[in-house]
Length: 321
Ligand code: 5AD
Image (cartoon, rainbow, N blue to C red; front, side):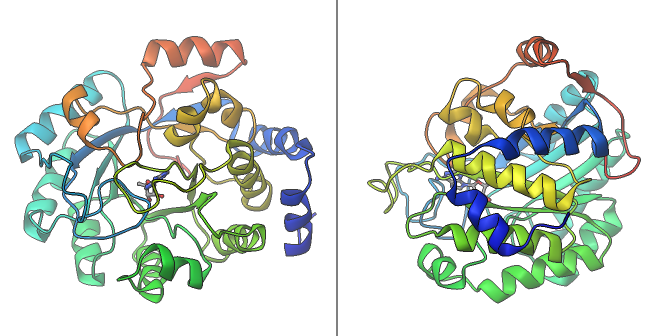
């Protein structure tokens, strides 16, 4: 059964969480019980953008900024690969120091390790995306954040919503496995717009969807805004699983940050991916998109997965893996 926008809105408004279980069954049927790991490297917290909710926005002068060197990035990637990771995710703020040439060198070097590579570097030109693809990158993550154009404008006063959308279609057309997603619980966000977000994920034919509750950061203009509701974020995620069926959905760090077992709840409500952070503790603490970012160790994750009848799947490539 295909859910209509009205169905989705009704479910989002209802206190009933029956869709969590339904999403869990669909996850099992379409992508199985294996949980895929992606090793995340946060290689630069320097960002030229001004996203109101984000602790790394350029106007936040109290963050100590860093960028890792190419060899530091490669060392972390190698360590990840030695520890069994089959996918590396390179994420950063929009930092122009990493120009196309440098990025492509890093991409080729990581690809030589024989792993899948995901990039999450923000909005770039079609030519830049094409160069990354030609250098060997497999996947790209770029959350739309919200499909409500008005809200988008409020949250990103200097950004262009149409361009962000265009980026996603460019990525898809270039053959990237494309990930997107949204924040749940932004100030002035409506459940109607969250329903539109889910339908948009279907429209762009996303391969991966990451959803996180909004968590106010004390050094941003949204410091006094209400924190997003974990239950709502999980419900948006569950509905995304029900609508898109066979995609990859991470149990996000923001979910774990709001509740000690947020990640497990997500994995039992449609999620099938975890993205452990490979960045060293010092730099990880400086990559403060929101405060108190949760940390997972592989061992702890393994134990917790076992308790819910799931397991870590370390397989590379294949269909949408
Ligand atoms: N709370 C939760 N998630 C956030 N992000 C940025 N700032 C916050 C915040 N305050 C998310 C955005 C971005 C991803 C890397 O982190 O959705 O795409």
